[in-house]
Image 1 (cartoon, one colour):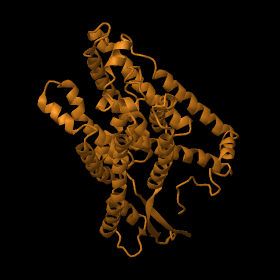
Image 2 (image 1 turned 30 degrees about the vertical axis):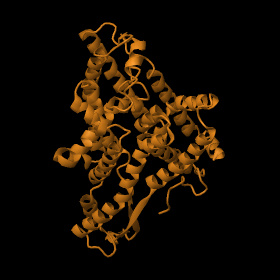
Image 3 (image 1 turned 180 degrees about the vertical axis):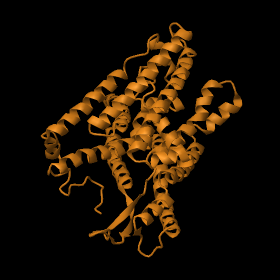
Image 4 (image 1 turned 90 degrees about the horizontal axis):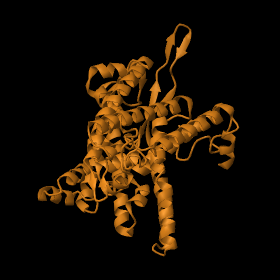
Length: 441
């Protein structure tokens, strides 16, 4: 494995892409520590201590801690992700966006432009909300905003919206001129940035004899098992055989080959957990604004991460959103129609409607274990906190959104680097030229 990584730096173009990507990621991390003007850092630190289990905590995780520090990248890449999700959902219900998705490169370019406009709009609206939120924070050490007023709100809107556009640009540059997956890499780096602090805290607890070193060794072994399971589920797929009939056009014969349709066990990826987590954080977020309301506080108790009711509802919502997002991301009717137009068919199944029903039945059955696994991985950090007494920062690396994003992006990045190696007749990261967990066709 070490030899393969050293080989990666021997190819001039690949080496340039890797260093270019690393440079832009460093720029992103530097920007995540540049504060918004007019902020009292001591008061801000005191005000942000209780956001871990709220919707704002989810924003802070995706921005790599930039939101809690109120930096110029406080909104991170979330407005871009939200705009992309909105356009993807519109593509499932509105004919205009459906046509764009079928227009090839020109349609993708138009969708990308609309996503940028949507990012700018959402970024401005969210930046205005952040300005209002920061201006309303008051702590025992003083107000978070040094000079509140419309001037501060407008300055915050301009700063944070510019930060969103800059992060989006960095992601696009990494995708075009780096090793690819720019937006995903920015999210992953933001999550991994918390790892050194977590590791340092664990070492401190061990030195102070507040943590048993045997427990950390067991946790390390458990992490290896969980990561291996996530890789297996992420790469797992059910392959449906497809046969294409021979066609004679002029003097050439087309078709006649056999291929397959890979139906992934986890087609929806990490999106079900993000959707479910965002909804589950709403009660606790409302609780911070209605602290004097007994009804809201009672509801907040049920949706506390320490309550079994929270785990049960969270798991059920993940299962629901897994099926919901899979239905949007993969359309069996469209796949069956494309196969029929190209002369393809599944052996033993009639083309057209019967093929769509066959694919849909298999997809429904394959998605069930994937949704159950996602629900288990999502609630596992909370179960681990209850069983071992570790804090949330450490437990979040044993499951949930953080682990799925890290594993998924790492696999995609390895595939990108591996494709460059194989194109230049170098071996991949394994002798077979396939990263661990991938299956042969």
